[in-house]
Amino acid sequence: MRIGVLTGGGDCPGLNAVIRAVVRTANGRYGDSIVGFNDGWRGLLEDRKVQLQNDDRNDRLLTKGGTMLGTARTNPEKLRAGIDQIKQTLDDNGIDVLIPIGGEGTLTAAHWLAEEGVAVVGVPKTIDNDIDCTDVTFGFDTALTIATEAIDRLHSTAESHQRVMLVEVMGRHAGWIALHSGLASGAHMTLIPEQPFDVDEVCALVKKRFQSGMSHFICVVAEGAHPAPESMTLREGGIDEFGHERFTGVAQQLGVEIERRINKEVRTTVLGHVQRGGTPTPFDRVLATRFGVNAVDAAHAGAFGNMVSLRGTEISLVPLADATRQLKRVPQSRYDDAAAFFG
Ligand SMILES: Nc1ncnc2c1ncn2[C@@H]1O[C@H](COP(=O)(O)OP(=O)(O)O)[C@@H](O)[C@H]1O
Ligand SMILES: O=P(O)(O)OC[C@H]1O[C@](O)(COP(=O)(O)O)[C@@H](O)[C@@H]1O
Ligand SMILES: [Mg+2]
Image 1 (spheres, helix red, strand yellow):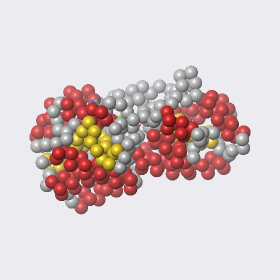
Image 2: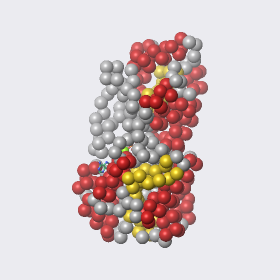
Image 3: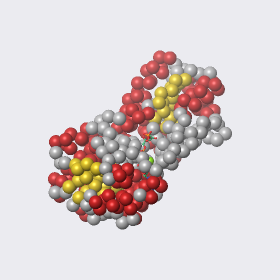
């Protein structure tokens, strides 16, 4: 069999571990040949690829951050207009099954290709952990570990200056990184996209904490968090060519608003792409490896149109149609658990 593999969307710690596992399993277990397409879907539109070898170099990918194939975003309309080109590239390269590794966007495209008759088995990735029908995605644990360590460090400096510290973490539509890093680091409030916040409530909590003699206030803010409409105006950033909202720095704008309303000194830290860089944690290495092995097994079982997923401790297959129907957002009950530690 000839297997094609690509990585799409934002890079994520563990992508290389999946590629390694796909190559090693496909070649070692089944004698397959594996072609890696470069820069996400663009590689299929432009027939840019590399033959992947089950060698020493492949083995060393396990611990490396990023993706050796490169990744990119492609305007979805351009992708849809290029369906014939994609099929041609797959034919020209003799690809029997395609394994796209990506987030909800890449997997939506994979689902669409499956409906167009292409044999695909998807692998979910994202640090945001917002893909439905899997308990968790690789990359999330690494991002969470980095964010938690950073917030741990902010405690001592915030305490020394009796400051309010706002920490902006990634999380476009779902607040999983914020929720978990807030819980893990003992933050005093967490703001997530699922729960519009009221600036007066944030200020009241800050005031109450300082009035009761506490030394500092740390609030974790997901980049996609929004104020309730009447609470504060957030600058508009518009939509980019890939259909994504452009963020304008919610934490920084909230900080200005807190200083204005209650005259408390605020500092803002934006963690940004640091959360996505570097080596994956052992948990993510193991999950990525298991996803890669199981995706190849699924390809050989002819289980196309599915995505590998973690359910409890087991890897299973779920239809891409189900996995891409909606995002996995933080439910109210989970936010309520975290709220027990607010203030
Ligand atoms: N509805 C769609 N139809 C076709 N292709 C899509 C669709 N949504 C996303 N894609 C493709 O998948 C790519 C990756 O999606 P994106 O949301 O940027 O990253 P991720 O895969 O990490 O979620 C997009 O640039 C686009 O080429
Ligand atoms: O690297 P970019 O293009 O700035 O994208 C940043 C976005 O990618 C993410 O890191 C991951 O999102 P995806 O998994 O959907 O690619 C988001 O948390 C963040 O908003
Ligand atoms: Mg996406």
